[in-house]
Image 1: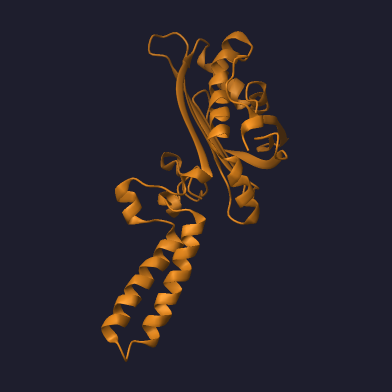
Image 2: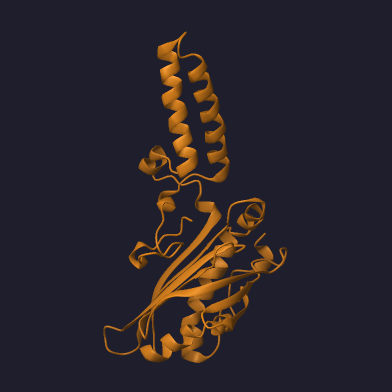
Length: 249
């Protein structure tokens, strides 16, 4: 997974909230497949030509090896130097910070009850507690695509200050979120920092889900996150939303 929040890393933990060697993935699946095929061909040619054309063979072996490393790691140094990331379209990463005019304990406990999230997040149809630390999420990103469901668990928590969750292994979509709560600088209200992330998994199903993670859906989820301030302060969400699920796909 490439959804990395390294500050949450704990011994023995893995997944989008804890850090992974794939944190620097910056090429998409199609490019990785091309690199794998091209690298394999170059390595084969290099090996078969090593005695007849040693210099040419050596060049092919080096180039082939580099392409295979690119394919396996998903990282391209040239892309990184240029600030390019062709894998970015396969994920939505929302990061927002705002202040709400409610006490920190109240704001924290509202978020801690994850079943409250659909009250202000329109893309979530439900979040339902299944077991002590396991929650069923159901989301509809587009009217043109069926709702999808997955299980997630709370993976780190500090009472009154922090909550972090992530989808379990083999979920149909990789999802992670974290929210930090701090007393506002002026002593009134709560400063809230939210990270909300979705990423399509590998495979055929992931290819279909990746189509959903487009700019329209990203805008919808961003507005959903920002709706929290209106909801927690006034008990309602704005009616003048500009993002629409109908236009998502």
